[in-house]
Length: 141
Image (cartoon, rainbow, N blue to C red; front, side, top):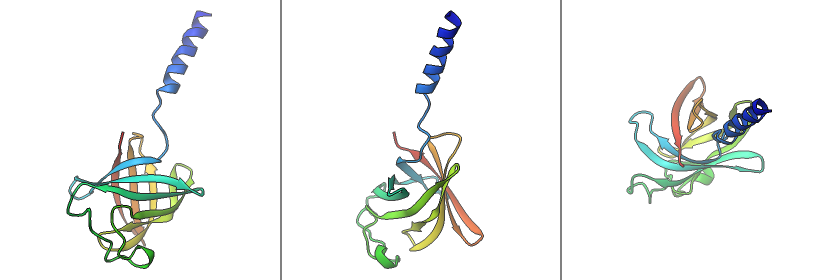
């Protein structure tokens, strides 16, 4: 009986101390070239699809900028509040099938999001043909 109680206690403790295993929430974007934090992004689900919007920027000079080089509905939209990740769905351990927009140059890429082994690190990959760019974002707690 003591063994069963001890095993239950260990399993209960481990289960309730597991980190969140989903991508929803707020993430600090990290520039893959400089290593600097650039913005805070909120990843959310709407109608079964995953989206991401910029909710804050670290550089006050960028706060009032708009997406000048963007096209379509994104054209001239403010950077803060911009929904730049659109239409991803869960596919095993990754979220893909949607797009990510680079507001600095207006280019849209195919997108894949994946949690790293550390659930507080999100791998963000944008694809254009056979070329891709990867960033690692950190969860905001």
